[in-house]
Image (tube, rainbow, N blue to C red; front, side, top):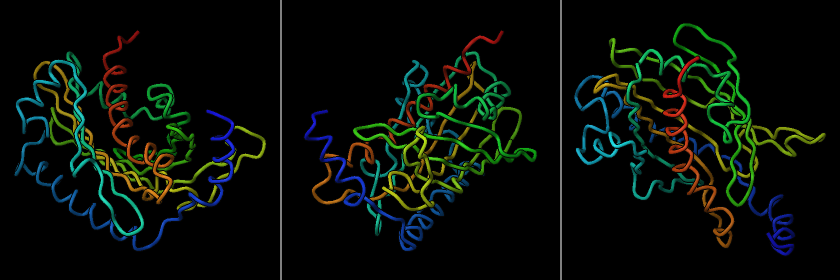
Length: 263
């Protein structure tokens, strides 16, 4: 990065790209989530296929060949709401030879997520567990043009359907931007303030053991700030590029960890 661009960022970051979350933006996101969960319930009840991959022979074959299949569920992956952007992406991966029990044990080992999902997850721990419900903390690194560190808390619950199928949902309950991460002056901004690179992240997972392995699917719905006029070159890559990349990397890392031989 040239000195001119670096100097420009120094002046832009504190004020020009600040964006606090507004109540009307939350209301729009919550309304969309209700529609998302209604469609999820259709899959769980059997009104639609449990797996998204089964709705397309081409998609299913791609995953069987070892590809990470990720597609937008709306437009090009996002749409505008008052004061922000909602992003909705879905992906699938097939893990040959895996079992449902082993896959769930790995994804529920949240203390190890900082190793499994690096470099995006740089810190992880389980805060509490009650049966199939977890409260977890993740420290996330978002890096694309800009580098942002977020301190996040999540409420995660798993819903076993039968011996071969399970689904889960994860809601962020707190996201705080970290200022000066790793430095003596490190501090967290109040939730819903800062630069708005991630305000909400809701994830819906499906796991199915069949075809000689395990299918893993994830739908990730997130809420971010919009793209400010004149700063698209700076903001757009991290807002519009990261949701897809993050989902693909998460599925890839899950497959690699599940397929890794145990000692």
